[in-house]
Image (cartoon, rainbow, N blue to C red; front, side, top):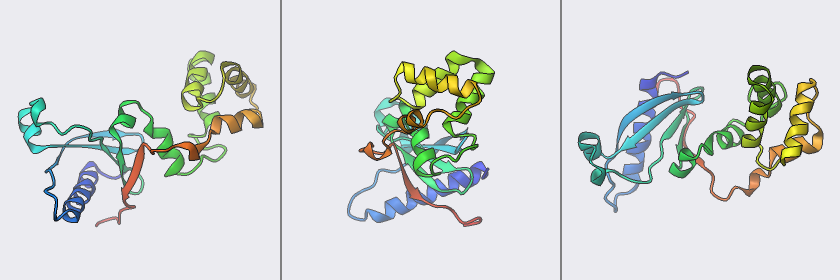
Length: 185
């Protein structure tokens, strides 16, 4: 995991570059005001300097989601505020940026379902499955979890439905803006 200070510096580099790209438009100044450790890296939140000082909603810039700085490679990604508020961005990030999970990968859906099934039971496993594979019907999800509970791979047709049509996403919830970062840049 890259250090928090490095994550902040990488986001500040992106912000400086974005300011430099708009010489004809007065850019609204933004500053880093909060960071949070996340399983994928660091979430770096930016806001107007006036709001950071006053916390007055009239000074707040609206519609700005956080940046994700990947903990492995330092790449920087914007998360659209609506996707962040609805938790729609994590699976998209894992799939589009990190690549489809391989069998045995802890982020692979059957592995995640098996982990939750063992720790929290069938209902929690179905809840996870329905959240991550929204195209599955309740009966299909039940069959999927049952196969995992028997130690089997889910049926191929259910695995395909669970993977979903990734190309159908019209507005991706996350966009790469920089990276991967060099170790000391």
